Length: 216
Image (tube, rainbow, N blue to C red; front, side):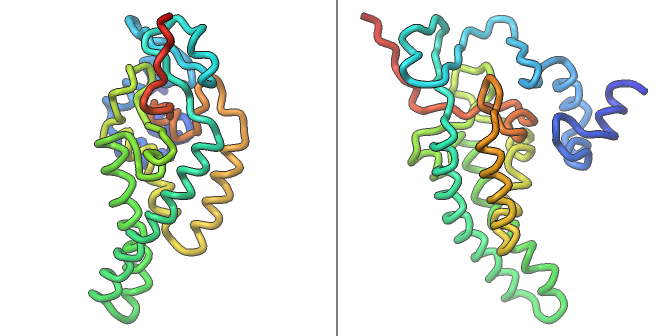
């Protein structure tokens, strides 16, 4: 079985195979070419350096130097986003409820919740690399090995945000998903403090604006 077929069947780095197939063959090829951050391969010409805290910036030699987001900041940002996204989800719920009745509500109402959540997360992360919660906490989602100015592509944003954006906004499920996410936050994220969604989307969450290195 070739590599593409294996990815088709099993998905890529924790991404469900259904989602992986939707990304297309070119996305598979990029993953299999070593761009997956799980393998920690630095592309030729990449000079960025990641450090764990602000205190390590002065001793770093890369350019630029980006400080990885701490678990505490990421949890706080996610809590803020969950509250705001719930408002969007309620708008989706009301739109679905107003346009249907009876048995159709069973299907359309959850879809309305999910659509509202996606409408909040996807555009903000793709266009600016930050939701409202991340902006408040001074964080940004960027492509791994970039200089911090490149937010993820639409495809990678979808891979990173779809599960959480859809399920965090559905009453009941949001509590379960939130608990799972908090448990994941407490685990060792490896060299780049990445969740499985970051690894799948080839993204990293950093402090932003970037911390300036003292030139003196």
